[in-house]
Length: 403
Image (cartoon, rainbow, N blue to C red; front, top):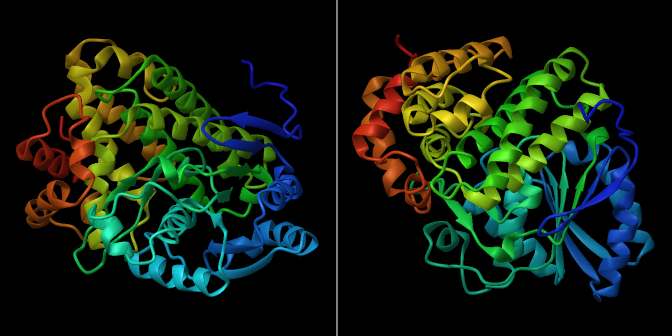
C-alpha cells in the first residue's frame, strides 16, 4: 500500500479549511506560525491547555521560546479537564481579557482544542457567558485566530468547525458548530503523541473510527467522506496494534494521526449522527467517562441499527476489521458482533453496565439525547428515523449485542 516507505520526517502542509503542518518534527513549524502572528500584528496570546501534557509532550518547550523570541506576551490557562465545562471556558476568557489576548493557542487533545475554540469565540462576545454558547442562545460569527497544537490521534478537532463543552448545571454536553471555530493554523506532530498511555491510544483511535462510520453513513454523506472513511479504518486497523505494542513507534503514530485528521475532515464534510448524539449524555452524566470509551460501548449497537439502511457502504468500510460482510441487510448482527470482537481485540470490551449504568437510566439518557442543544441536529442526520424508540434500542443493545 501507499503508506509503506513514507518518510514520516518530511513535514508537509496539508490544506483543509486551515493549514495543517503535519509530520514528525512539525512542532518546529511554530516559528513560521509565530511569524505569521507577528505579521497579523498579534502581540498577546492566551494558551488554553490541560495541567500536564502540554509540558510532558515537549510541545511547550518549543512554543514558549518561539513566543518569547517574537516578543509576543502570553498567559497560560492550564485547568482544562476531559469533557471541558462552560465554567472553565468562562475562567479562561477572564485570563485572556486580562492580557488583552489577540489570539488563542490550544495545546492538547480534543478537550483542550474544543475549549480553546470556545474561548477564542467568547473573547469576541464580552457580554455573554459560555452557557449561552452551549445553549445555542449565542451563535458566534467571529472568533480570535486560533492555533491548534494537537497531542492525540483521535478527535480531528484541528481541522473542523466543531467544539464540545459541558454545561454541568443542566447535564448538557452540546455540539457547537460555527465556521469561525476553524483553526487558523494547526500542528499534527506524531512525536508529541508517543507519551499517550495504552488506554488513551485505544480510545482516541476508536474515536476516529466512530467519526467515519457516522460520516460515511449520514444523510449528508458525500463521496469524499466515504473515501476518507474507508482509508481511516484501514489505517487504524493496520497501525493501532503497532502503537499498542510499542508506544514510541513513530511510524504507527504518524499514520494514526493522519487517520484521525482525515476522519475529522470526513465528518466536517458530512456530519455525525447516532454514536456521538448518544455518547454525549453518557459523559454528561459521568464526566470522568472517556469520550472514546463511551463511543466504543455504543458503536456495535449503532452498526446493528443502521446496517440495513447503509449495508453497501458499511460492508466496504468495515472490511479491514470485519472481513467478508455482504450488502445484505441481514448481515447487521454479524457486522455488529464483528465490531464488538474487534473492539475487544483492541482491549476495549466494556459495556454500559461496567461503567455503572443500568437499564433504568435509558429513559433519562434518551431524553438528554433529544433535549441537549445541538444533538437533535446529529439525530436528524441518522440514516434511519431517529425516534425515541430507536435511541432506546441502541442504548439497550449497548449493554451487550444479542444474537
